Length: 258
Ligand code: WAQ
Ligand code: MG
Image 1: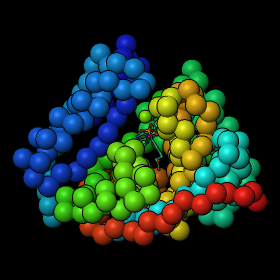
Image 2: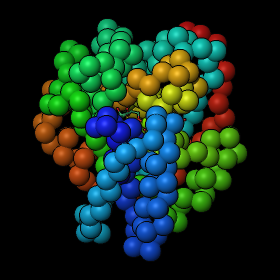
Image 3: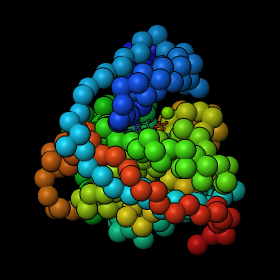
Image 4: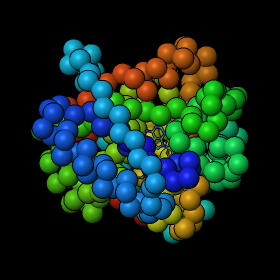
């Protein structure tokens, strides 16, 4: 789904659904969420529906989820900086990527529709289109696990579509060894949370930007020289990926500083 107003991106969402009857219901839910979005009312919504051969679907386990409460977004950014360094991103590259997201990574200083691809050593920006970026698609949690995941998230007050969608996307992204880490914060003005993800897990951070801010985005930090970027983009955008196992979910902790 892609929703826009006067040609400006408002929201997008991707699903991979197992049965047509379920798909119909889920499509309606996507349409309703797109209609009235915190970023504004859409005047154009596109839904693209494609059949995917079951034999092509990759299967995997969701990342473990843990998280930190921080007192303000500046603290959140310094925590993100240390989590990215821990994952192997050069410190100056992490700082620069956060500055680019802060100022709006697309031309004109607005949010991109997809993610930036950044070389984790050199900081080179590798996505070909700086407005669209790379849009990860064709991933989902299998239907039989969705309720269990909701119940587990609900125990920590986290049963929200934003969390389920972000955890699913991050789990697909980190399943490839070409990506060292991901950084994300929302472009919705009322949603200040974000995360750093890597094969070590999905670490949510309660504040990564000021309330009311509409500039958000995603950065995939690529292992320097680790294979072909075009193949990676093809995997992220086109390979169907279904999560058939849940990860661990831990209680959020208060972050006390480095
Ligand atoms: N592929 C790549 N990048 C994307 C995609 C996608 N499918 N969807 C969105 N983006 C980029 C794009 O630049 C958006 O501006 C940005 O990410 C944020 O998207 O644990 O809500 O859908 O509480 O606003 C994370 C925290 C919430 C969840 C993320 O992202 C939690 C969120 P949004
Ligand atoms: Mg959004």
